[in-house]
Length: 46
Image 1: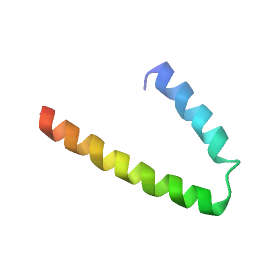
Image 2: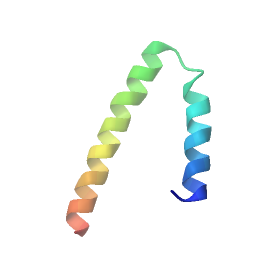
Image 3: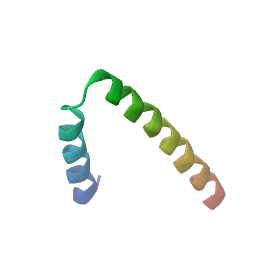
Image 4: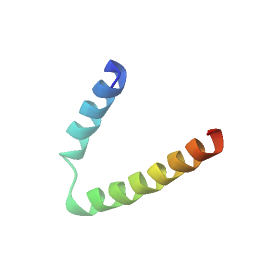
C-alpha cells in the first residue's frame, strides 16, 4: 500500500471513530456503493 493511501486511511479511521451508530451505518452503505463502482470501473478497464 502506498504511503499516501495509508495516511488517508488512518485519517479516515480517526474521523470514523468519532461518529455515532447512525452515521456509521450511512458511511458503511456509501462505502459499499463506492466499492461496487470501483469494481465496475475495473471491469470496464480490464
